[in-house]
Amino acid sequence: VSLTAVFLSFAASAAADRPAFRVRMSSDHADAVYKLGEEATFTVKITCTNGQPVAGAVFNWTLNNFGSKVFAKGQFDLSKNPDGVFKVKGAQTEPGFLRLDVRQAKVSGPAHMWGVAYSPREIVPGTPYPDDFMDFWKGAIARYDREVTAPIEMVEVSKDKTSTMWMLKIPSTQGRTVYGFYSEPNDKTKGPFPLNVTVPGAGPSSWGCGRSANACTLMVNVHYYDPTPLKGVKRKTGKSLEMQKEEDEAYAKKYPVKTVRYTQTGIAVSREDYFYYGIILAANRAVDWAVARDCVDKKRVWYSGGSQGGGFGLILTGLNPKITSARVSVPAITDHLSDRISGREAGWPRLIDAQLPENRETAAKNAPYFCGVNFARQIKCPIVFGVGFIDTVCPPHAGYAAFNCCPSANKEIFNGIGSGHALGSNPADKQMTKWINKFRPANPAK
Image 1 (spheres, rainbow, N blue to C red):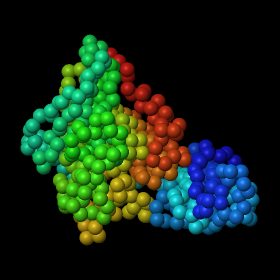
Image 2: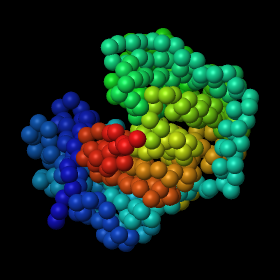
Image 3: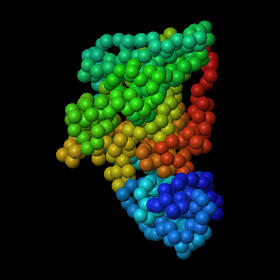
Image 4: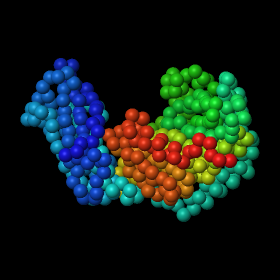
């Protein structure tokens, strides 16, 4: 039997005098990919982190479809298996994922997980494709261009020997402003330069962007508040969280939802009221603006982002043909209605579940216009995807649904076996970079 790479996690003990456990999980296919109906064997090995015998603890397990469908469940009593090893077998008969969850009985905390894929390149989205999808977005861009005519404002915030960085004030809808950062080399004789475009993952705004003597960088924040107070503040700490909380509460008050979260507000009122609507239009304009700068090489406009930034990679690359290649890792904002297929988990931010019951029907009608799957349908340039096989934030079937719908002749997807909502330490991350770099020439012939 060939085992996959080992995934380690730790379970806290219910009492201080009980040992903590290390749970090692694997599957009998090294690539964790199976054909429909083929039986997968999961191997779980539980050991004490302090060297004590494992006898006495009981673990519950469930085998599910990365959603609400449970195929089997049971218990494993370490007192009956002192070696701490047990196996679970199961199969999927439809394209998707099979996930084993293991949790110590009567102990709170997240489950230990292992996921395998079944014919993943046949996964289809649960989110429908509206007939007027691109008509809606072309019309939205045209209306935005007519009604929001103020230019993007540049405010220089930093300059060193190699580059200069500006904060961008990008006019958006409803009189709001979206903020970003842009940097370019000081020595223009080495240009034109590639343009690196990115959007951060979910959470508070970031202050600043990447800088280089050999490339330009555009970063667009996904918020409507001025990030100036965040200079020198580490993201997701202190003032950063305070400003995020203020915006969340303001939008949740205007557009009531079950959870106070910017990503979920407005969709039940109209497409134009959804929080991301104005952000998308502003970010798309910022890409046009940056590409038009004299020092930017129009043939080397590269997007890279993960999570929320991965979802925006699909959105911007699908909307804007000026982007010449894209790298999207664990993409969010993708397959909002995935749960319509066998109860699979919906893609982040679980947009429909977040709505009040009376608003869900309207939200479900509007959500497809903001789905990464449908933007992926427009992408023709080289693009690489990465998914985590135990990613409970942005489930892997959602990423595969977008990949499978993408018509690009140059596309690839890499599997983060044993990885959750981050691929940085998984071989898939380097594989993604190596693959997309084939389409990102350092200095193409002019």
